[in-house]
Figure 1: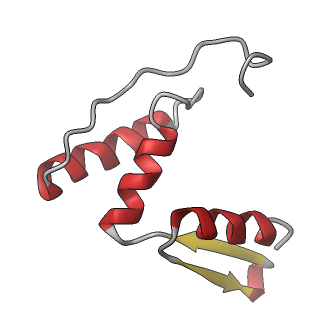
Figure 2: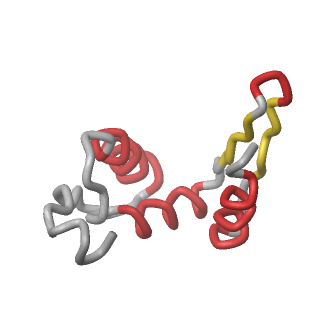
Amino acid sequence: MKDLPLANRLLAIIGSGHIRHKIKDNACVLIISSVKGLRLIVNLLNGYLRTPKVHQLYLLIEWLNKHHGSYFKNLPLDESPIDSNS
């Protein structure tokens, strides 16, 4: 729940979705299910990830390209020095 302010800020930026509160786990989950919101996430993240989690983004890109007429390219991991654009 300590990240709830961040989830609220991301929700405001994305403009679609909702936050699910998991009281039992003391957590919140930001859920973005509209294609418009997913496209915005891809635009914001593509080319800026530094970890192997980029593969999950690539799966989202593949799905958007195949099922929703998008034309995203899989940009590579960001290998610039972390202190230059953290």
